[in-house]
Length: 208
Image 1 (cartoon, one colour):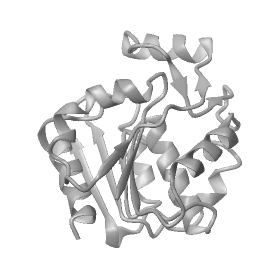
Image 2: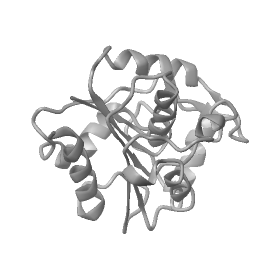
Image 3: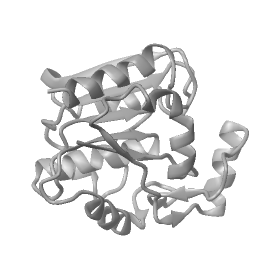
């Protein structure tokens, strides 16, 4: 099985791989982890906005799965990212998705497309600090509850996700969703309850 791990806005695959090093060795041995790079450079305005919120940026290149308009109604570059991600999953391949921040929004969108038969069906999605997509083109995908096993994780001190992440929970089937809130900021947890929940969830759907 493959685990597709999607980085957040201004990050890249290598940065997220280094950040997740404490967890990777604890994942099932039969799981192959892939860290694709988003295909777009972040806009200058987007970089400035995030830097003001977080107080700094990680190592370049600063990439994004889309650059949103100011009102969030258009995700410029989404179709290119979707094509890249379709090519990342081989036909018939078993896979799960772990997404952080913008990567979690991507993972949620892929789940919604999969339910409609427009993307390969993941075995599970783990959504860390995510939210429901705001783009007009993606909102209708979430009109019905999504029957994809899901884990929802966010930090109590995460000013970027603590209000919106709980709303994304309601878009997934209560029978197969799990929710964990941990005492942390806007990062993908590598220790404590948040990290433990991610490891447990991935193992559940990998070691079968």
